[in-house]
Amino acid sequence: MGKHTVEIGDDKGNSFKITVDISYSGVSTQGSWRSLDKGSIRYNSGVSKKNMTPGTLTGADLYLYGLGGLDAGWGLKLNEWDDIGGVNDQGTGTLQQAWVLGASAGKISWALAD
Image 1 (tube, rainbow, N blue to C red):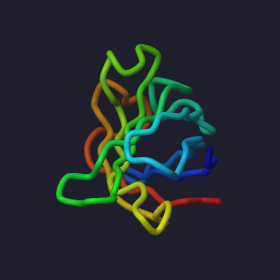
Image 2: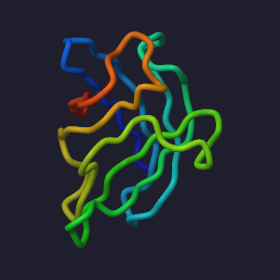
Image 3: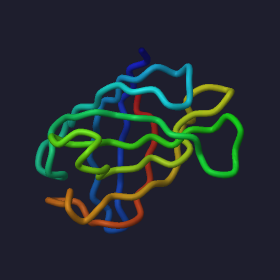
Image 4: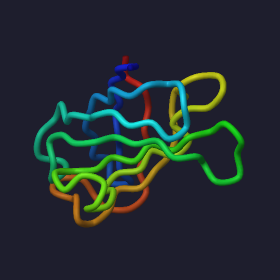
C-alpha cells in the first residue's frame, strides 16, 4: 500500500486534507482514506477505489466512498490519480453535493502534501 496526504481545494478557496492508503500497482485496486480536517465533507473515512481513466491505457482515477461503501456511490473523485509513472503530484476532480459540509460541491483541485 502507498499512503499519501492530499490537500483538496474547491473553487471558493476552501481546503482540507485527507490521507489515502492504496496500492500503486493495478488499475482496479481498493484501499482506504481518512479525513485529517473534520467538517469539510460529510464522512471522516471510507473505501478508496481506483478505476481506469477513460481514454488512457495505464491511468487511474481515484474514487472515495463513505460509510455505505461501494454500493452507496462515490462522493469525491480525484482525476488521474496515478499512471505508469506513479502517483501524480496534482490534478482536478469532483466533490458531490451529498458530501458537502464546509466545502463547495463541483470541481475541485488536489495536490500531494507529503
